Each structure stands twice: as structure tokens, then as C-alpha cells.
Length: 396
Ligand SMILES: *Cc1c(COP(=O)(O)O)cnc(C)c1O
Image (tube, rainbow, N blue to C red):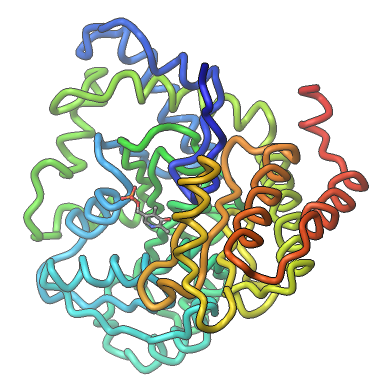
């Protein structure tokens, strides 16, 4: 008997059965046309998910963090100037990685719970008349706080300043779940991983390079070996990797992109939005607040929920795991102990979301919080009953 429950952490996400099966495959020669039949469709599927006509896609056996490193080391040299804002744990970690690589990061501090300040970016870029800033970093969806930022606005800031810096975007917890427009937003490098919107286990760093980012590769002198995209390019041309690829995961990625494109990206985004709205209505019914400070920054993939002063939010996560076998996300960094997170991305339906909301209510009631059982569930039920999604009906 299996007592497996869905997880409500913001990655790794729940996996569709078909994807699990696709990963479990016999060994093949990973330097053969047979591997090419997995590799090339996976690369072109990712390109479509990024909404790009021109990006070159690179997939490494790694995680999102390796994607960050791929972006930096292939395009920059020690001492290069980078502009980045810190509004949560993930933007913080990317900044930390830049610093450890000897890059000169100008950090804009932003309140956790707010989005990236595109207006501050614009001021700084305008003041940088010698164009010393080589790259602007932007975390599309801050998974620690449940905050989405406006990447189009960051692009506008660059354009308004007439600044030639490249724009690198961390889309690890947004790509394949929330609208992402690599070409339209002029994103030069998009970074993600396999275990969030792509509904796979962790193990792949997925990165898209614009032609402008590709042009920066030769001049960049940061050391790189494993993550050198030039070796990867040569490998791909021969249906191979410079080393051994994670063939099963690649097969899963190929299928995941097919499933996402089959559902239709806009339907995928609408489903995530709907499910997130239900969660947010539940939070409101509980009398609790989101860490995200205004509705324009609400994330459709993760909600960070503030608990009352003096209560340790991490107890919710611990108790949910031990009593009900259900996983929620803990607060990270500045908001550790102050928020718990409900991840609502990947393979989720209304029914699964309702189970996550219902279990959270039991947990909070057990721990003595003033939560009326069923209040959040009812708010979400009302919303889900009265707004249906085309792709879910079709699947039924
Ligand atoms: C999960 C996540 C990462 C880190 O990815 P790993 O796969 O754990 O290395 C980076 N950025 C964001 C926004 C994330 O959500």
C-alpha cells in the first residue's frame, strides 16, 4: 500500500505518471542518432516554451544553480560589472555566485515581498554613461517570497537608458508555468531547471542564449569547463554531449515539452493562475496575509503565507510532514520562521489544490491558530466551481 500524497513545495513538483514512465528507460548509446531523437526535440521544445525563435538552448546535467553559473561564466570576465536587485533568497544566491566569481555587483536592495525595482534599474543604467555595466540580472519569480517581477519593465528600463547591457533572467520557478517571453522581452539568457514547471526530477539545468549572449562567449574569460557551451554545441552537432548525458531525464524533458505545448502554453498559464487564485482566496479566508505586498506581484506558482507574530511558521511544515505526510515549503533567509509556502505549480488540478488547502487548515488548527476548518477550502471551492479551464475539461 502506498500512502504517497502530492507535495506542495515549490519544486520539485508532482510528476505526471507518463513523465515518470518516460524517464525509466533502457540504456541506449548516448553517442548515436538514437540519442539525437531525444536531444533535438527536447531542445526545440524548450525553445518554444521560452517563446523564442532565435535562442540556442543548452541543457546540462545539473540544476538551476548550474544554469546561473553557465550564464555567468560563458559571457563575463573577472571584474565585469553586474547590476542586480536583491528581493529574496534566490536573487541573493545569484548575487553571491557573481561575487564568488570575482564580478563587481552593484546590488539594489529591495524589500522582501516587493518586485524588482525597474525604475531604480533605469536610473542606474542612465547614470552609467560609459556603459560599464555588462549584465542586468533579474529573478522573474522570487520563490522565497512568492513575488513575480515585471521583466518587460526591466527591458523597458534598459531601452529607456539606451544601455547595451545584456539581460539575464532566472526563470527557474516561472518558466513553463507563467508567461515568459524570451524574444519579446529581449532576454539574453534565460535560466531554468527540470524540477519545477517541467514536472521532472531535479537534474537538468536548462538555459537559453540569445544571439547577443552567444556573441559574448568568445571574449569572456571566466574559467569554465563543465559548463562551457562551446563544447556542448560541438557535442549537439554530433547527437551527443561532451560527456555523458542524463538520457532518461532528457527523454522526460522531451515529453514534458510535448505535454505543455499540447495543453497550450496559454492554457498552462491560465491553469496556474486559476489554481493560485483559489489558494489566495483561501489565505484571505483564513485571515492571513501573503508575503507578496500587492496583487500585481502575486506569483502564480508559489504563495508565501505570513503567520501571526510570535508563531514559528516552520512548525506548520514540520507538523504537516509528520502527522499528515504532506510537504509545504519553509520560509528562507529573512523570512525564515515567518512564512510557510504552498507551491502550486507543475502537475496540479483543482482537486489536488483543494487537498493542499484542506491539509494546511488541519495543520494550523492542530497548532492552535485561529483557523476555521473548511473556511479556505470553501473559498477555493466557490472559485473553482465557477471558473473552469478548457484543458482540464478536455482531460476529463
Ligand atoms: C529553485 C530555484 C533556483 C535553484 O534551482 P536549483 O535547481 O535548486 O539549483 C533558482 N532560482 C529560483 C527562482 C528557484 O526557484
